[in-house]
Each structure stands twice: as C-alpha cells, then as structure tokens.
Image (cartoon, rainbow, N blue to C red; front, side):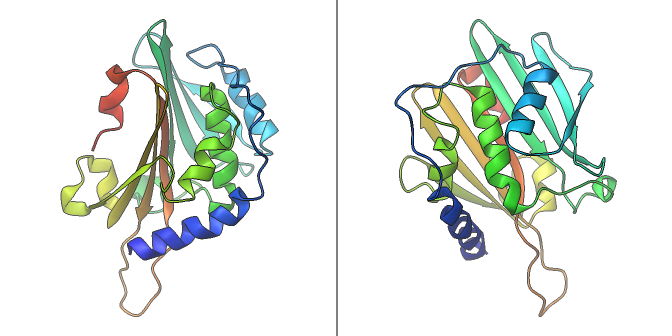
Length: 215
C-alpha cells in the first residue's frame, strides 16, 4: 500500500523537477485571515477554474471558504486564521468515500502541484511557490518526515474512511507544513486499489495551531 502511495509521488516528482528554482528572496505574506479576493487571485494564477464562497467562521480572526470546481461541485474547504502571534492555513479536500460527498468533486493528482503552490503563496514566506511541493514529491528525503497510519491508529475520525493515511511533515524556519494522502480500501478482491486522495494541506507558524494537525 505504502509503495503505491510512493509511486504516485514519484510520478508527480517528474513535474516537480521541471519547476523553476528559487529567486533568493522570500515571498510576500498576505494579510491574515485571508480575504476571498486573495484566494480567487491565486486560484486564477494557478489556472484553477474554481470559485470561492464564504462560510461562517467559528472563531475571531478566522475566515472559512468553500471552493467549487468549474462544474460547480464542491471540491475543498479553506480555513485561515491569523493575528499578531502567527497564522494558519488549511485546505481540506472532498472525498469519494464519504456518503455526503458523493456528488462533490475529488481533486485529481494532476492538480496537486497547482493547489499546493496556491497554498504556499497564500501562506507566504517561502523561497518560491514550489518549495514544499518539490520536497514533498521526494517523499521527505530532504527535510520532511513521513509517517503512515493504519485505520486503527488514526486519531481523527474523519480520516478513518481510508485504509491508510500517509502524513508528510516538514519545517522551514518557523513554518510547519503537513500534507496528508489517503489510501481508499479495496472492497473487491482482484481489483486495483483506487487512486490515492489528497486529504489536506496545512501550514502554520505558531504551536497554538498544532492541535489542528496532530494525529
């Protein structure tokens, strides 16, 4: 199972190797929590024809948005938090495995580079928009740490729709990145397992947000 997840990353790494290098300057940090217009601008820059709809936020200094694909199907939720002490950004993606999300869209692996780059720009402070993605597709060989969790070991109930979760964590100065992939369960013997799903991508630079990403 883990080998299949790694094989997906190896295919994505071909794209990563073709991406531009860093400029030597860190990227600008947008105002937090994020405004819808800022998210829309970055989606457009990444050639993702998605639309943004604001939702009610549960906390002060927080914004929550639902993203819809070009066909108007829900594909992700964006949660951003920020104040003078730090900032937090998480993209959570829809799954084909949740009954309530059967009519939603599941992000394809061909769009992973675009949405991770989008998140990198929206969080800000990196060398370039592809820095975490390039290291992610190397399966953490450079700076990251990879852990895999079987269903029995998963702390988050929302993850237990998957047979296995791979969690990649990397740190850049004060910024922590956490990317999660889920392996759907094979229900019929003899059939290939479904493709891995990108579960979430998370960035934060203050430990007060760590509970949102810990297993």
